[in-house]
Amino acid sequence: MKNVREQVSQAASRGIFFNTGNGPSLQPIDIGHDDYIGLVDPEIAFWSLIRKDRLSDALAPDGPFMKQVQGQRAEFKEEMRRLRFGLKPTAVYFNPTDRCNLNCTYCYIPEDMRREGVTMSPDRVIKALGILREFFKPVLPEGVKPQIVFHGAEPMLAREAIFAGMDQYKDDFRFGVQTNGSLLDAEAIEFLTSRGIGIGLSLDSSIAEVADRTRQTWGGSSVYAKVCEVLEQLQGYPNYNVICTVTGQNMESLVNVVDFYHERRVPVCMLNPVRCTRQGARDIKPKDKKGSRSSEQTISVCGCLQIRSR
Image (cartoon, rainbow, N blue to C red; front, side, top):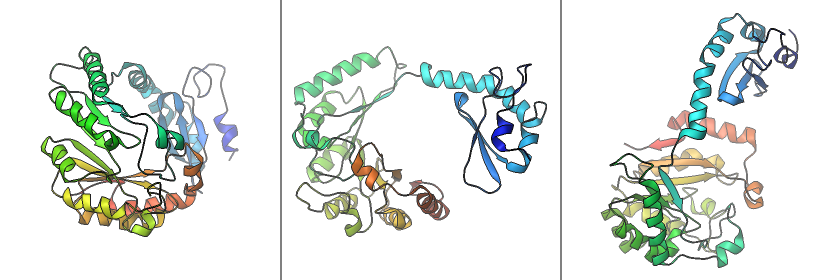
């Protein structure tokens, strides 16, 4: 069999073969498998796995594989055009503060911003929401409410402002808040749950020692017990989820993490790979092969990486 890259780079002067400018632009991807190779067309987000010993047959211009790719390429291309340029926004992540009360090792926000950044006043949040309401009016169909998710840093440091905004525009938006959970007291939980506000929490392990490796206060104190307390208080509330950031610190125990959430009737948990935008996150990024094995183990036990409890 010819070298895979030589086969994929073949072209024909008639312009009907792949990689000639007039047909599919199929690129080989080594997936580290003994028998299979990946083929992708980046322009249309197409991918397929092909047996290495059948690659010549798959890339034959008159073969069934190439005919199918050619037959659907225009449809895929139009779909990608709509996704890139035709969609109109229906949601906004709204950061009411730069600051955070935690110093998570993998945070993507610079440390000086989280320590000393700006926090919006209630008036400023309300004004900004008014601008967003006017923006969305001509964008969305009548009766469809856009979503505002107060995010961060830690949005509960701007609690007064975001609660005022939620009350002011309760009829105009669907609201949510993504929080580390450490500042949610009984009054705040009552405010949010009584209005059906979406709540997202963060907890990286079922064991305090592991969770504390990546998520602590600026003074090095644990918030594990507090977040677990919030989980207990939210049991039975349907509109919340928990994010577990997957790092080299917790990767070996992901199955236990999912079991932990399931026992507490968490409606949805998401295992999100660490975002490697800053060095602290890159330092604890799992090795790719090791991460793949852990994810496969988690999937085999749980079915998928987004778990919905019944």
